[in-house]
Image 1 (cartoon, each protein chain N blue to C red):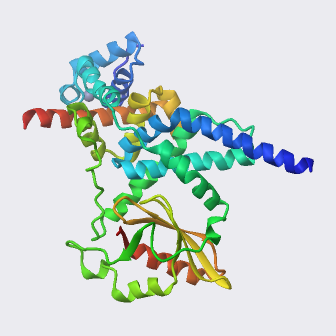
Image 2 (image 1 turned 90 degrees about the horizontal axis):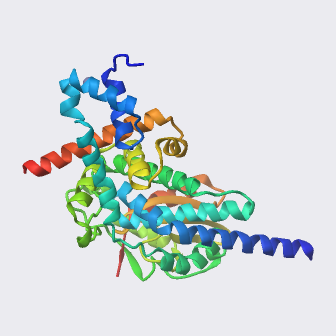
Image 3 (image 1 turned 180 degrees about the horizontal axis):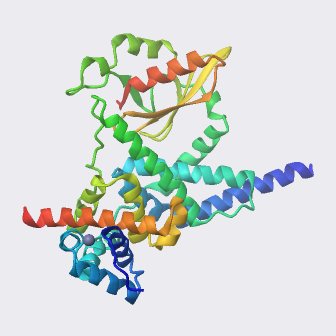
Length: 175
Length: 194
Ligand SMILES: [Zn+2]
């Protein structure tokens, strides 16, 4: 019977921990993913998957350390593969251009639109570097750890992303 | 060390400045490079300009008002979705199609006919005796095909517009060809809510 109780505790503790993670990160993580993929529905979906993986991992090992960085890493990987996949789909005749109408009217500030327009021109890895740092607030070395690359690579990607953002803003001003 | 900086290094320096991680020495190096490189002046801009540009990201973030309807979705979806993960939902029998929706031919715009779902495929899907556990609209659906003797359970992820995004085999029939063809067929449809 002890085995049953241990198992029940294990499930309960995984549940509690994942709920705490959800509570703390759901909004910022989902917003981050939405910026990255440019689509609210997809962001909800991808983020939910991240929390599900967290739940599964914690159920297997309730004492495992799961930080925000882990969540961002999982979310970033999910976002990058989503974007890659969308790019592949885009070359198919079937029109799968994502619906951006879910972008809220009250968020259509110049900054918000400039950022989103720039992100649309960036490679997924560049978007991720820009968003992990300037949007999510990680340092270049933290972002490098999340992305599995070097700080220098992050700085370079941020620079390239910034260059695109600058161009978008200039075009906006000229039009 | 104040050696010469090439454009690639200048890029990394600009990134460092953008992230507010640059030391005085790095800022000096960057300035020195700009003094001799018009291309980087045009392309990257001076420190002020870099800071002004990158500030857009934080401004966009701070102005963000979208509250993901996630807690509710999760709380609601959790039971189903978690149960679903552990296979419980796969045993649930329901009727055709998706949560309150129906399966129908994708309205095609400029897409060639080859990519529209054929009536043959539509029939094939109907004939599969599609069963589904009702779930949050627009989210993954759990579908069960076939008789218990030979059944494939797939998880079909559908985006907000009803386009299938991914199909995974949750439970194999033991026949890879059957599994694959079920996924392929399901991926060709577009799902609309009634
Ligand atoms: Zn240069």
